[in-house]
Structures are given as structure tokens and as C-alpha cells.
Image (cartoon, rainbow, N blue to C red; front, side, top):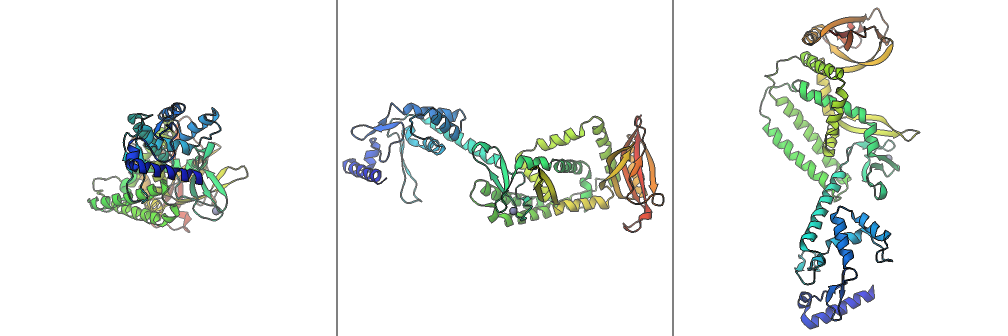
Length: 470
Ligand SMILES: [Zn+2]
């Protein structure tokens, strides 16, 4: 190293005495080590090395054909190009950056805040200016694709089952590059993102259906005041979204560790929730004159039609799959506060627990209070156990309202299944249906007390809403 440096020094000094450094560069006497593809003539002037220039051209071509640094260096190593030289991806990256190949020389200043000086057309180019610029564009494009790939769906959402720390997002190098991981370095746990998504698929698809339903039918129930101006909220929301995006960008481009920002990030999300809530509340609902039960009936009618055509699950899956990774990430963080997954004996991921966002739970509470909250109850229908949607916290009037609306589309009947005195608690409900003619829409647990009092179970009756096929 020392000899190289001192030789370099001597060269520079000798050039200086001849022309001064600038003059030297302008006449092709570049200081420093000549890049691959060039050599020096007997006067130390940098000239094209005819034995290696084609390698340079080939590297630029391969890159423009879409090969990565790694793929290019692998090819050159396999072909033993200039063996025993070992090609690295950083070598390729450096070459594609080097302006010498289009004939320019860049002199970097010793002080960091000074711009480097570019001397144009000081050596014979190996690569045309247009081609060199194209390689730079390609680089930007690849960089963007890389950043996009680095969007983690469960960003800041997974917690380590052992130590409860937030699991860190991590890409992996080498051959497994396409996988993304969540890891806890303390407990040496690694979860692959695609497996996490698969494990949570049913929860996510339920949330997707919920979200679609709320947007289409139940949005009015979330709002309960009568103001129209949401502009001030929109502006604040926009501002906070920008802040959030900046933090994420800083993390994704590797400038900062997420931990440094975790608190800010959380605070922004909480503010956003509050603003969204206020926005809902201010929306004008005068125009909406349907009761919650009528909205529920409309939703059930559409749902039954989709089920009949076997389209419901398809539509929900499509709604999820058409989202970009960013949108998926936004969606998940809208509903889920944290998730703990564990690995079972077979190394399969299992859900240990899911914490939902407070804003989501508040929505559910509103739906519960309006009598349109569904739970799933086990029912034996013609000897087969199924989980059936069941309305809870609904009274007789609300049931009538619901059924009348449903009657526009279907012929609906109500069957009372049992009353409290006839059956003991926790006994499974049995239902006999005429398979050909009848379809169970939902169960209802009708509560005729005005207030929800757990101990007064005798006021409940369980019934089935069944439609008859024509
Ligand atoms: Zn841990």
C-alpha cells in the first residue's frame, strides 16, 4: 500500500511540475490508479487498454439488460475473467459509477463540503455518455424497486413471545434474498414474513370483509353528530400522514434504526386515530334515514347473494390481493395493535394473541350498542356442527325491523329455538332445516330487557332467521 501511495505521490508531483495538476488532467494525465479498461502510455497519459475495454462494455451492457451487481460479478467469476482477479458486486457498482468511462475525470476535494470538480472529455471514452446516463437511471429504478420490496407488512406489529420486545424487520442476503424476516435478536427468533401472513390470513380476511362492510353499509353508525365541515381534520390528517411517511422513509433507506423513532411513530398513529374518529363524528348523517337493522338487512341480502353465487370469499381475497404492500401495511396497522406468534413443535406459526387497536374496538362497541354486532355461535344443523353468525344485544322491535327489510328480497321466517326454562346453559343449539328449501341466515339472541344485564338470562330468547327458497 505504501508503495502505491508513494508512487502516486511521485506521479502527481511530477505532473505538477510539468503542467500543474489541472493542465495535467486536461491533457489526459490522470492522477491515481487507472480504472479497468485503461492503461498509461509511455508518457503516463491515460489511454484505452484494448485488452480490457471490452470487459467494461460488457459490464455496462449486462447491467442495462437488467442484471444485478451480484449476477454480473458471479458471471465474471464463473468465466474466470481476468483470473485470479475476484469480482465483487462492489467492484461492479464502482465501475458503473465511474465517469472516466465516458471520458470525464472527477477530482474530489479534500474538504467534505466542497463540490468535486469534473473535467470533461479528458480521456477517450469507452462508454457513450448516453449509455452511462442510462445506467444511472437503471440504478435509480433498481433502488426504488429495492425500497418497495422492503415494505414490511407487520412493521412494528409483531412482538416476541419470549421477551415481548417488538420484533425487528430484516431482509436477508444471499440466496434467500427474496424473503423478509421479523426477528428478536435477544431470543434468536426468526419469522419469515410470508409465513406470518399465511398464519394470520383468516384474521386479515375477516378484517377486510369488515372494512368493506363498514365502508358500504355501516359507516353512518360510526358517526353521530351533525356537522359538515371536516376540512380542518383533513388538513391535520394530511400533515400527520406526511410525518409518518418521513419516518418510514428514513427507516427504509437505512438512515436510522426504527427504535429511535418508535415512540414518535406511535404518537403520530394515536393522533391520527383521534382525528379520524373526530372526522367520522362530524360527517353529516342527516341524509341517512335507515336504522342500523335495516342496514344490517341490506348487508345480509348482498352477502347471501354472493354466497349463493359462491363469490364472497373470492371478492374478499381479491380486495386484499389488489392492495400494494404499502396499502396492506397501512391496513394492518389500522386494526392491529400487536400480534404474538409462537412456533409449535412442527415449526409452524400459531397465533398466541392479537391486540386490536383501540379505535377498532370503539367501532365494534358502537355496533354492539346499535344491535348489529355479530358473534359466532356453534349450532348443530341437521347433525352437522357449524359456526353461525348471531346477533346479540337486539330486542324484539329491532328484530322485526330487520326481518321486514329482509322480506323485500327473501321469504323470511323466524323460528324460536328455545327459551331459558326449556334448556340448560351451554347446551348446543340444534336445528332441523329442509335442505332443499331453507337457508339459515343468522341466529338472534333477543334481549327484551332495556339494559344489558348479564344475570337476567331468563329474558333471552334464541331464534333463527331462515329464508325459504322459492
Ligand atoms: Zn425476544
